[in-house]
Image (cartoon, rainbow, N blue to C red; front, side, top):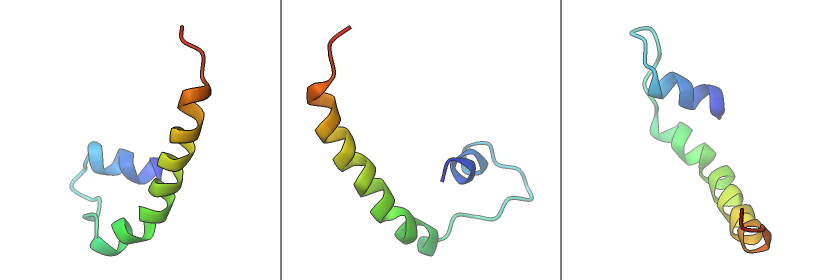
Length: 47
């Protein structure tokens, strides 16, 4: 996911466009990351 994000943010003329299928395929991963962050953030100490 990180490599693809990099391709999208720093586009070259050779990079393929992001498709709705790619977004749909990664949606579950993103939701899992958000859920993990919601659990972790309250337990993190303040700096």
